[in-house]
Amino acid sequence: MFFLAFEGLDGSGKSTLMSQLESHLRIQNKSFIKTREPGGTLIGDQLRNIILSKGAEVPSPRTELLLYEASRSQHVDLVIKPALEKKQWVLCDRFTASSVAFQAGGRQISGDQVDWLNDFATDSLKPNLNVLLDLTIEESQRRRQSRAAATGETEDRMESEAESFHRRVREGFLKQAEQHPTDWLVLDASKTPEELFNLLLTELKSRKWLE
Image 1 (cartoon, helix red, strand yellow):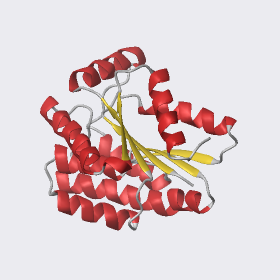
Image 2 (cartoon, rainbow, N blue to C red):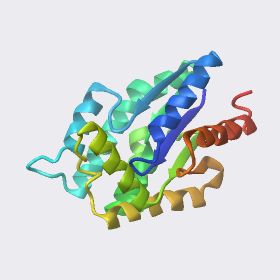
Image 3 (cartoon, rainbow, N blue to C red):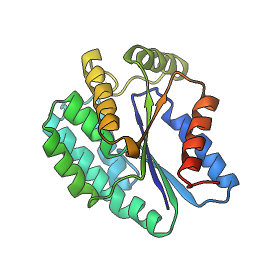
Image 4 (spheres, helix red, strand yellow):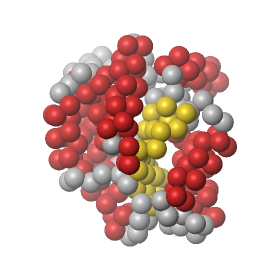
């Protein structure tokens, strides 16, 4: 059916928006799956732990990218493609655009290399729509700190990166959306969850994907 990837800085509200759409699809009797990257499979979840853990040995930028792509390849082959073949909607928390933003933007790896690896790992599969929840660096940090205080969870390795890293990541997302406007929906993540969901629903209806 339709493949939607939800992108943005940590704390932007991706999970909340996905859950709202999940509830709506269920009411509309639409078959769907909700998944995430890195992860989504047994191997993917094991790689996720390696990628995000603040272990004694930190992956180099190229190793980090390859770990993401290995997780993605397994995810596409075992989860996403089979769901699409069954005519199910796929709601995915992060996909290839995150590698462009985090590894090409944040880590400053060659964009051409990241694009090639994304294409190889996905067998050229692309989302029908990338939904970007755009948030300032300052607000992202505030929300992450608030979440940590409420849950007692510490930030993972990627979340703990310097402000300059996250700034490059945000710019990487916005640049992709600017270059491919028909494939992206950019939402102001400072809006309320209700406002964001209404904007998403309006977009999906305008594309004739929902009634």
